[in-house]
Every structure is written in C-alpha cells, then in structure tokens.
Image (cartoon, rainbow, N blue to C red; front, side, top):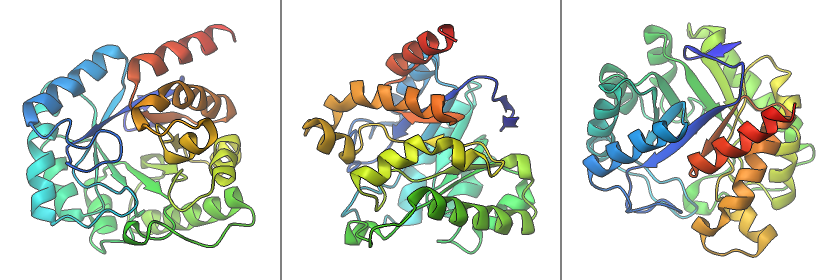
Length: 270
C-alpha cells in the first residue's frame, strides 16, 4: 500500500506547520513565511515524510477565516517547501485554497470536513487526482465541538469515513488516493479518543490507510494533568507509537525528532 507516492512499509510522519495566530499549540509561532519554511525544512531533516501546512485554526472556539486570508498565509509556505522537494499537504476545507496550493506544488489535501464544507472540493480532487485525507469531525468549533456521546465511536467514525470515501470515488478520486483520519479531539471524550487510538486497526480494515493526529490534544492534558499544550509531547509521542502499533499508517505530530526516535526503537524491537 502507498499514499501520495509514499510506500507505507513503515509508519510515516506528518509534521504540523500552522501559519495561524490562534492555533491551540503553536499559534503565532510562524506568522513569518520564511520562519514557517525554515521550520518545515528542519522537520524534514528530523525525519518528517510530509509537512502539513494550515492557515485556519480549528481549535474549539475558533472562528472561520476568510478564504483569501487563509490563502495569503499558506501559499508562500507551500510554494517555498514544494520548490525544495518537500512532500507538502495543505490543511484546508476550501477548494479555492486547495486548488491554488496544488498548483503551487502541494501533493495532498488534508480536509477536516471530509469534503462536506465546500461542494467544489470533491470535484476538484477528482479532476486533479490529488490524494486526500478525510477527517471525521463532530460539531463545529464555534460551539466547542459539543456533541452527544457515541455508542461505538470506532464503528460510527468508520461508517462515516467509508461513506465519505464512497463519495470521493463517485467524484473520480482513485481509491489509493484516499486516507482516513478519525479526528481525535473533535467532539470526542477522553475515553472516545483513546478508543480511536486503540481502534486504529479496525479503521484500517476498511482498506484505507489511517492517519492519527493526537499530538498535544486537550484530552492528553486531562489524562496527564499537563495544562500547557507544549508540555504534552512525551505522552503525544507514546500515543503516536501506540497508534502505529495498533494499525495506523501515519501520524501527525508537533515533535518530529522525538516521534522518529521512538518509532525507530519500536521498529527495531520487532
């Protein structure tokens, strides 16, 4: 199995590069495009296989960003990294942003709405052949993603993502260009988030590679008592390894170097 030209013979690491003033962990760290590009290149040197560039915060309580403002934030970074041979994904739910970034060299669209927020997204993916990561999201950021509890969270998330994959296939997206993200932290309780990590293999049984993005999430703070997001890297790294052990093909992380070391040791142990 491969995704976006990357063989999934080992767990792949996606580095997070948010070009936003208000992301929950690194908001404001990379408002300068040159800084964002330098950080992306550093992440690659530390072992990242993909660099995910986002220009709109999706933390609880965040507000929607104008698409043109989002594009101004991400496009120079996407272009700068792609010119240096980096495999770039653009974290967007808007076709306008996705199209411009694909034209600038991005190779993957990472859509937290799984193609539901913009009716032009799936036709764009079908026409361009771009790989897409479909994420499960419950609720909306402006309402803090408050939703009723799940019964079987893994089963419900899997059914949603399979349905979205079928919509992609109907729009002309190739099967090997689709990956799943169960959306840890988006409207899920601590127990539900942990169940999604444990259930990575069940999700992967649908036939699509699974990306887990749990890095520095609030539920880790609730388990560990660590309030500062940047203080949650040790637990984030452990969960990334556990997700891969359970069947995830990719992990989306802030601490690339630490995650790469931990995965290397896990793989060496067989």
